[in-house]
Image 1: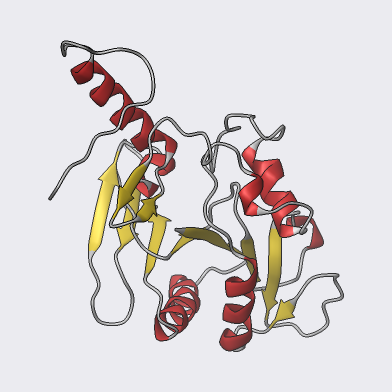
Image 2 (image 1 turned 90 degrees about the horizontal axis):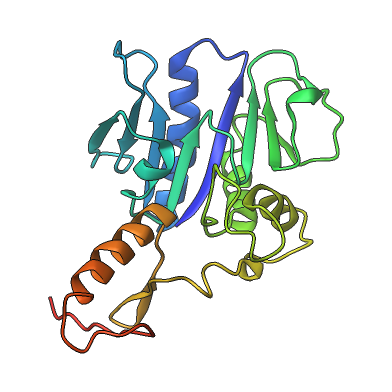
Length: 232
């Protein structure tokens, strides 16, 4: 799954945000991809954090609401080609949408494009108006990569960088997504019909602890590489 964020500044109208995200999501779907949206539901009054996952765009829309869990855990439940995060920052590319005056200090090393209604922006980054959905989507297909293992934490450090720094290097083309070592040396590997299924750290750790606990009670159990085949 490929992850990117759309972050908004000086956009008060919620419908303006929703419309822009919907245009991006629907354009990706028109090109043959599945798309999910994850946002923090600030309107919900509750003592817990609330995160909402919208299954797909266009007509077939399913909403899942998660309460009292962190974003990384919620992302583990998403299964789509692309996941759009609204107003979230982490180890992934981001598109910055300015509803008012352009502010250069809001641009970070993980920004792949700036979007603004103003046409007088002078930055060393791709710049689009909100109407240039085709061009923005082209850039997403070019720049957005498979999610890194830890989007909001430092990561395992096997590559010599934390995941935030690795994301910056991939975006600047100073490194490749394959430079990540955790995917190559993970504790759990799942293959379904000869296709590798990527796991977020939370799910990988869960599988590992449960399987190891069950295997340790079996006669003949020993440490090493274990293969389990399941026919469903």
